Length: 381
Image (cartoon, rainbow, N blue to C red; front, side, top):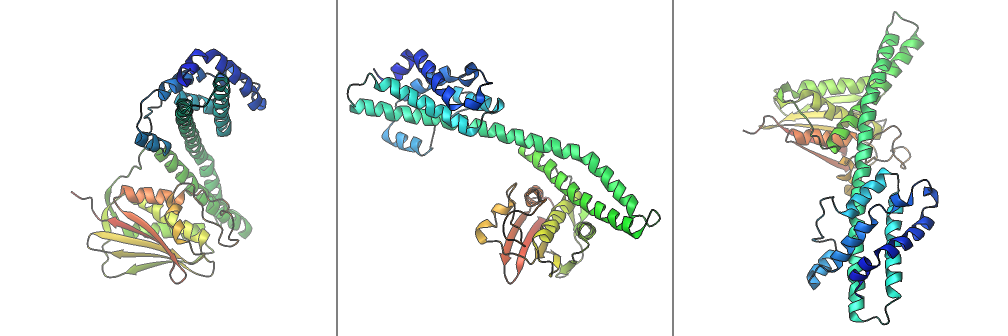
């Protein structure tokens, strides 16, 4: 009997055998009903049987094995729904893969019992079956992963939103302690540290909110209006000095001209430069100043932030703009910087792109590490 027909004809026995096998794979899942363990197994078997019978050329088979032109899935296949529900009830990705391993072993073991010889047709059926099962597994993994990422991003967005209020209260308390008329020099110093820490935490919370918005299908919103980019640079620099008083920040104006006006979202641009300055502080050398350099071109404004510290390898220069990527500690050379979210450069890139600009990084022993933001002055008509 062809394998596709065998799967349908022996569906009940396959599910029974698979249930028994699944119980040995999930000893920690005794609280979940076995009905839940196989909620879409019957439909998956039907889809596997149908997939095996779909005609395909040698080229189509080769392409499918490489993931090229795979069967389109809109998320409504039994395998796709299976992956979503497995994530929802708390399975791990390893358990999902183990389920499919169990299903593969069960079907082949039962089918091969009634095979007397391995003919070319039998071998072809096995190849097609494995292709179909791998396709179903890929669909389950894809929806499982999408659901996991969505859950994570929703959690980060909620966390960032809920942290704003207590951070605001901490900042106000710190500002009060900084007042000369309130207490001693020690309380003023403590207040300054509280304000600086609250400022850093607020920046990370803002990054979390922006990340959550972009990852959950939203867009990086900007409100263009006439703004002076130089004033934005100075505001970002003032914020960096307040947050990191132990560091020396420099503002440099390169070239001729003093008109830095353009159609920008000033608040968003300040976030870009603030993130770059904060990144420079955490990954720079304490013995070298951090510089923010601005210059004017006929149709654009170019702002760069430079620091000296550990050199970033060329192959990592683009990856550092990806979300949740963290650079290593410049002091120890191993592990991420403590307290860093890994979102600052990602947010800076997204805001820059929303302005129609570009952001690039370069790193060398002679020049240090420099992030350069190029922004068109006006929106193209």
